[in-house]
Amino acid sequence: MKILHIDSSITGAQSVSRDLSARIVERLGGSSEHRIVYRDLAATPLAHFSAASAPSAHPLSQAMPVLNAQQQMQRAESDAVLAEFLDADIVVIGVPMYNFTVPSELKAWVDRLIVPGTTFRRGEAGPEGLAHGKRVILGVARGGIYAAGSPFAAAEHAESLLRSLLGFIGVTNIESVVAEGLNFPDSRQAAIEAAHDAVQRLAA
Image 1 (cartoon, rainbow, N blue to C red):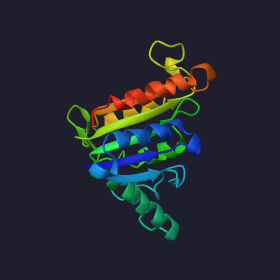
Image 2: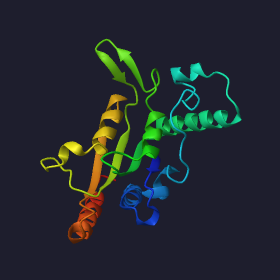
Image 3: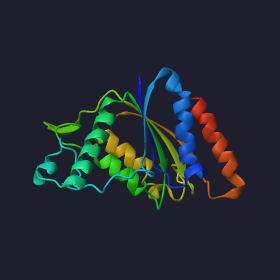
Image 4: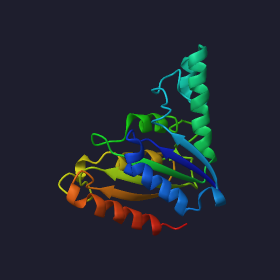
């Protein structure tokens, strides 16, 4: 089994999303049972998505057939990102929510996955996802309260965005472990402990 482990938090060792994603990988059996590929998008950010940095399989890349040395490295990295995702059986993503959405580093990673003809195609009834058969687990950390029914639920554009984008390319088996209310000192530790318990309830 191949696990792709993605982190994107900028807060290092203090990050709750990093803690959750690591615990999820450990729950799944870690490196003792699976081959793990790890990407830290905050430590090694991808370039913003463009014709130069798009994966070779993306039609947009044809607009920049000639690249300089830096652009060649960016495209090669994008090709590697797409290949890692396609090759993975399970994808574990640490998802901090910044300013109501995902970090730009994580958005840049997702941009490499939405590739016409590779991860989705035009079907008779509209777009058809092609990245079937993957299990995705999101380790989500939110400072406020955005759960369904809460006053700010409509402002949650991180977990919901990833579910929409991944669903668009055919990933339907998406699970989430959420720690929220982390900016409230009185409830922070309880929220983290509840998320840790939720990790242990995941199917290994």
